[in-house]
Image (cartoon, rainbow, N blue to C red; front, side, top):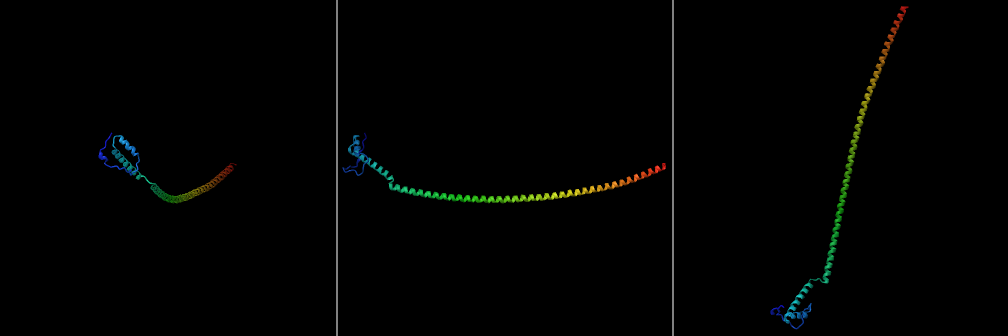
Length: 199
């Protein structure tokens, strides 16, 4: 059983009702303290101190609590903030989409320019190849014409040589025939002279 010093309860208690609304059974609490060995003044002092502490704690708790009006105000503010954030996000999304579209259009334009450059380069390359082929064909035709001309010249020389040989052979045949005719004629004359001489 504990005892409290008398000066701790110097507060005087009147018979008028306590100005605060108590949140527990004060009479039962005082009786319990008296059963523990405290006198009436000590029990009422402890009860009053406990009541003030509890009352102050409840006031602090209720002061920290939000009223319905404040809650609605905060809720409205949050909705406004959310709507503003949503609007900003939508605006950012639109800006991002616009930037992406602009970048995509730029890339498409660059690709088209690159395609055009490639087509022009391919056209120039094909033209160069065709020119080279045509030049090579022309050179080959000239070379072929030159070779054909040489072949014709050789054929002409061969024909001329053959004609000369034929002429020489014909002349040789005529000369040989003349010699043979003269030889046969001479032999015939000698034979006839010999036959006459024997007769």
